[in-house]
Image (cartoon, rainbow, N blue to C red; front, side, top):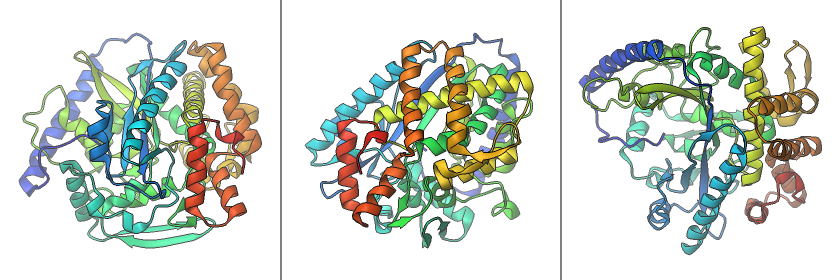
Length: 475
């Protein structure tokens, strides 16, 4: 969401102009893809982490402007809400000691940022949804002072022509209305980026879709919203409903949504996703960026307003386009080490699935991949899903028996160092065997100590700062 824009007020001719340039740049992208020579088979990995600023009472602290002023870190940015921050790592070749190097980058940035937050009598917290959050915290006064966010709020609400309505059934049932897009800021994630050769980008995109159910199950860390116990990864339905804006005119409330699992696998080229962006999604931010060019500024801005859980992104290496897949399913937290284990599992599993897709074709229908994902988001490790053989089984067993070995194969193929592979995948194995994800721990804590979300958050913060992985946290 983060690219800043020049203004926030638009008229009809702005939308027409933007759409014309977007159509031009979509054609340019197709030509650029066709003309790009075979790239070296070097994959790159990078991370984005969204996090919370909280005060000493464990409630949101809307101070990201002051925090960023003292932090002075170009890799940290404001998010939609004044109590959210985003951290980025530099991309690294996805091989050898990449995972430990990314781990050090993120840990160093997090440690420094935590110290700066404490100077403001606040703390940094990484979690999918802050358990102490109240609906009244999500108001326009707590929106970061950026044109992009004001414009998104206005345009998404205009496209809906009605308030945002949240309706989530889990252990409890939560139903409410909200008058702006600030509900989206209740959901914070770890976003995993993989730059992949263009020739196999569509296979890797499909592989990421297939891996999504297992990744969201092992990384679940968002069981509560406004005091209600909902899904294991409540962030998924929350984000989808918070920005539930669809296609053109009569299709604006139809099945194609701006936040979704996607509409299908990419069949022949990753370009299909960008064509779908043009064909099915109205322009939200019709900024005047000058003439359409091969830099694809219109296309990239438009793509940034469509949030598939696996999102293709266009970047450039010199004047040659490249594609990376942004995998958005993991929640933030519980610790940097836990998140790096989630990353290792995803990178290994998605690459193993990619190799199988190239060798064997599609073994899991898109409909089953989508159903698996939402079941895993709702029920976590207790979900029953469809495997590659078309059999139904519990995802906890499936991960332990089949997917962890596949992830290890994928990391081997990437030449990830053996010690790193074993270290990070053993964390996933222990977490799954003990059935203690971040969400499992939070629910167990509330079941034992009662609905004291301040106490939960304080204890969660203590364990997070100690750095022990979540599977070892006592209740």
